[in-house]
Amino acid sequence: MNSEKFLADDFLKQFKTGEELTSFLKSIQKLGIEKILEGELDAHLDYNKYEQSNSSNTRNGHTSKKVKASLGSSEIIVPRDRKASFNPMLVP
Image (cartoon, rainbow, N blue to C red; front, top):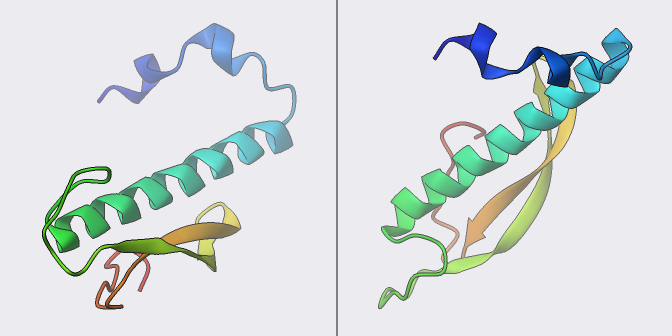
């Protein structure tokens, strides 16, 4: 992926300070981590969210967790499974 063409100049010009840009990047990082964790749970349960499953182990809500990332600490949402056998690889 060519990162220079990923975001348009007009989009980037909306950030007037480094703090605004850092805040935006931090929210993107948080969202990315949460989506990766959802994908890890999909793989663990062997079915995607909103699909029917005959398994006795299903999704069981979320837990919040504070993590330190490259752009500072964030409060993320970590998905859970009913049998508590899901151990995320990205955020142990």
